[in-house]
Image (cartoon, rainbow, N blue to C red; front, side, top):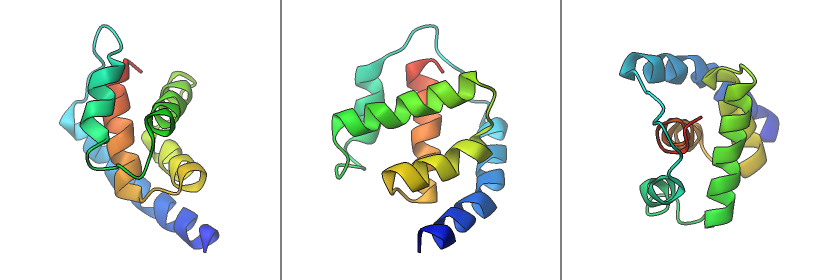
Length: 100
C-alpha cells in the first residue's frame, strides 16, 4: 500500500509543484513558527505540533538542498503518512511561514 501511495504522490507532485510556482509563494524575511502551526494544526490535528514542525523542517532542509516540491511531497507522504494534498499544504505553509 505504501508503494501505491508513493507512486500516487509522485504522479500528483508535479501539478501541485506547478501550482505552488503559479501562486508565487514567497518566503518571509524571518521564520514564524507560531503562524505555521496556527495555519496547519486546526486542519491536521492528528499531527502533534512537534510532528508538524518536523515536517516543516524537512521541507526547509530539502528546499535549501535544491529539491523541488515534486520531490518533497513523496517524502512527506511516506514519512508522516499524510495525503498528497496535506503534504502540499505543509510545503506551502513551511515556505510561507518558516522562511525556507
